[in-house]
Length: 184
Image 1 (cartoon, rainbow, N blue to C red):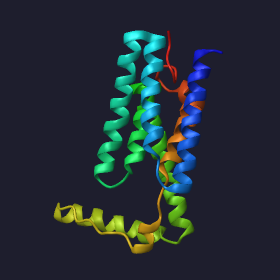
Image 2 (image 1 turned 45 degrees about the vertical axis):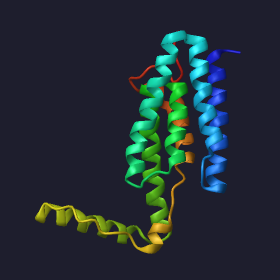
Image 3 (image 1 turned 135 degrees about the horizontal axis):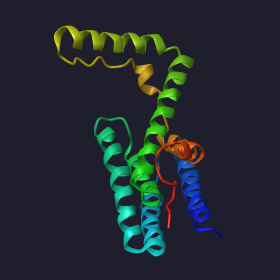
Image 4 (image 1 turned 180 degrees about the vertical axis):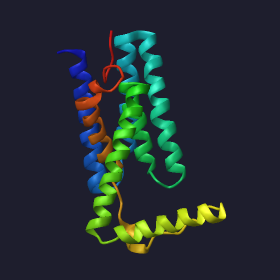
């Protein structure tokens, strides 16, 4: 079996397990994220040596730091951050950044769909308009909290990471980045 296909199958298996857990249990378990992260480091090290080890660590770093900032702001769960780091151990820094961008865009689209389905889209737009208007006129950021019903709507980012990775695989070749997995 080609090593790229093996990496792809490993990532798909990890993302399927993460998506199922995120969908049904609303969390991504540590046993999955930590073992996947370690497995990514080992595979990169075995097949690419020291260069693969550094590549994997860079992917973990980018995959952890950017989502962690959003986690601190209350936007992600800890499992989402660890999942991004784990996938980063396989794909490296450039690709995990692109996966993050795709996943975030898909999350935004899904959020708009959820808000529309549940009738909160106009309230949300009005709320953000008022936040921006206040910022523009007073130069102070005054956060207006969402309504309780709007707060209950949650996006399962683990599923979005799986979809973002799929988008990276399908459309990554048109982006100015290297192969999704690695090149010898």
